[in-house]
Length: 281
Image (cartoon, rainbow, N blue to C red; front, side):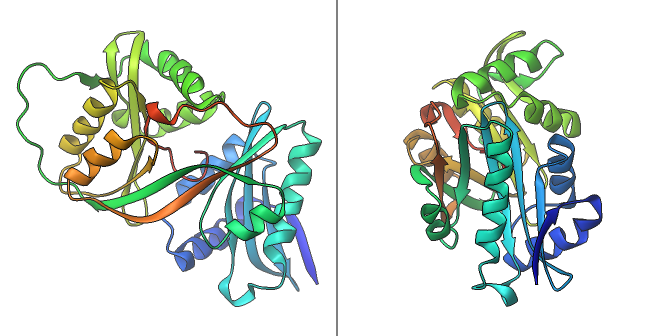
């Protein structure tokens, strides 16, 4: 018998196992962050008492993200993914969410389309080892953030993504304060970048900014993380960002399709130089 129940901290082992099986990059810290941001947002599928699937939701006012849609490969094709998605959407509807978003892999796209999601944008996932940075002339534009910058970064994120992700940005900055880099004067941020470790590579992003700040922040990340394996999710609409990461020798390994259900969110992909990851865009 299939049962969809709320996710608890006791399900971390299941989450880790399914991530490893799928070859995804998330760590236990990513699951814990999700539970802290939205304690009632996760669901587990159990078949005859055995955990076989997960899905998470995170609400940002009228906009929500669905992520971590994972089904044990031994149990696929039995409607488990659909049952998880239906439960997630029921929860979001009950909480007044109007726009639901997710980043789909090719495997999940048919299911999401059958539930009313439509394609909105394409992101390419780039992976590789960062080469040493070329020596810079002049004063670098990117710098370490100071206490005045976080609120400004959150305001910029809201402007670019059309979503109030302040809780997410604060959580990432609290967990990895040294990764928060900004461009611009204190309190007047033209761009910002965060990164975090992953199972197989460092996730660089979110990186948001204008046409000067974005490239400078990416170049700064290349210098800081030279020699590390990295992942960047770059919108296809931002050709300069894609050209920059390709010039480092990184290669696009797969496509992520950003999909939405309900009123379209006004997002500006030309100012997104790297997404925060498929969990929350």
